[in-house]
Length: 608
Image (cartoon, rainbow, N blue to C red; front, side):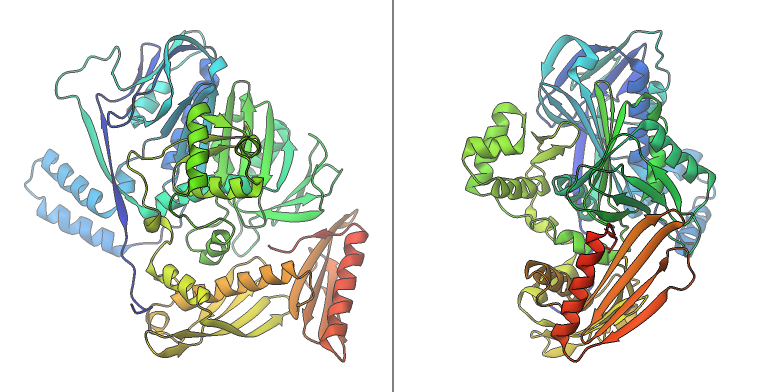
């Protein structure tokens, strides 16, 4: 197959059937579950209706959130004009139905809200949702102690009807009225007739399904955790609410982490500093981690007044982050991807951190069998019971998570059984986003992508040039791009037909993606060798001073060593150039400077 073909928009049809719509009326929240799934049942009185109301409201807001950039699309307007012209003389209901028919064909996610996945376990109820823009994952856990259970408690996983009408009814819950929660396939207490069956057929993009599973599975990769007090999170949201983002300026939150010291949060570009007070950082390595997607934290405003403590779990700069909030028997986990669909460089780098989805294995079947017995457990205890290596069990659980079999509960520190769909998910469909990405991995695995030039452009990033051989086409292409200090690709070029015709409007070509994968593999190999093979590299370090944040950037470019230092707010940094007779001498001086910086309290602020 040619590497220039455009991949189709692959979708998975999801059919959900409910006996009746869910309702919140007469102080009873009735969540009707999918008739096609194994029945789950919950019946009990909610002890604290207000936190429950606000948590469900936040879930609803996240499901409908779409923060993607929306450029003007004249084709939609032209289609609307044509439809309006054809609808002249039609009845209003017919015209409305024609519009919805068009909308369901062109943008099904704009019409249907994908219903939450609800998992009932012996210790509580868990709701999971994923936003339409594939940028926000949310998990709400309602502990069993939050309810006075009076009826059956049947464990399992299902979907529940979660419509706008239900959300409007939830807003009417009050603390002075006793409120009951029921979950089950039967519409208990609802006035229904034979025609009340609700059926939804949704064409879910495979990219959405893949993102949901991948972001949820990445919770196992969190390597840094810091505690915040609720008022500190409120201060961050207040700063964001009172200040608009600035074009071509930083939009990240910098987390400055020093073992034994309280973590510090810095909001760019204002350099607003927040010294946290909830406790010292318990990690082992000092570093600076930058996270994106901070505006999505604003979705949590309604739930924040009830929160007792907050934890922020980090994987790395530009990678997914998880905000865990606990409010008595309720816990709310917000996961942010840290990148958009346009940032294909970061998404490819993230792919390299998780095992590729694959078929079942004997160990995976053994792990799933144990989870079926107890529903939820700590994965380290599971490894001890099975007698397998913890790293091996974790890898199996990560693959099972991407196959939709399990979920990870950061708030409780457990892995839980959660079959996402009725029919098993085909791992081959979700292994890659499109055919071009599949071809990129094939090129990289076959060794047909070779980096021929790696040049440090000081203050800008690293320029990479490669040769990509495509045996099927008997041709050789020259992909190249500039990778900035934040891991984003700038000025991408390729000699293939796809890039010459579309540029990046239709996404990167397979050769550019293969180059990004090859560079990630090169960096990982250098890290394993402990710096012995480094020829070109740039590291950035930061340290907090009374005057502000001081930064030092050290770049190794073969025999040249360049040092830049100053305050982060300075328009220009001071520069020192050093030349050596041999590459080994330059590398030794480079590594020595890094060791001295780390020994004197400087934090590694390099984008990972």
